[in-house]
Image 1 (cartoon, rainbow, N blue to C red):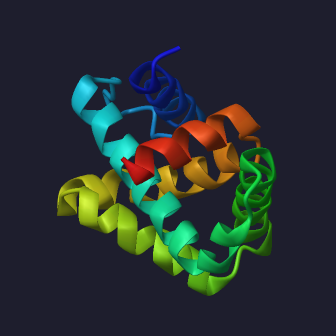
Image 2 (image 1 turned 180 degrees about the vertical axis):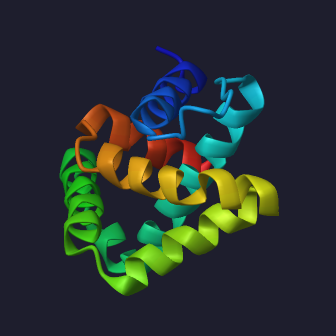
Length: 131
């Protein structure tokens, strides 16, 4: 599967998990998918930057497992700092109106989806964030 298709599947998974107000006529268009992918890749870059010492791990599979664990720990810890970082990243990619309408829903959806990422999905995100 190509990297773009895999990224799109992850973005659609996040969007499908979003709890949106029923009165809003919200569709999944290509621009929305691109925005979600951008947010997720920015988040992966932040996590990788925080874990630079993990780069010393030579085995690719072990590194992917460590990255998956880091993502899950960041979500499970659910600290104020982690939520603030994610909100800041989301704010950078959305307009004020979009952020007001969908920011919190996107944050919770990313966190809910992130906890269940497979190692293949983590690898796809890592590859795309380093490209």
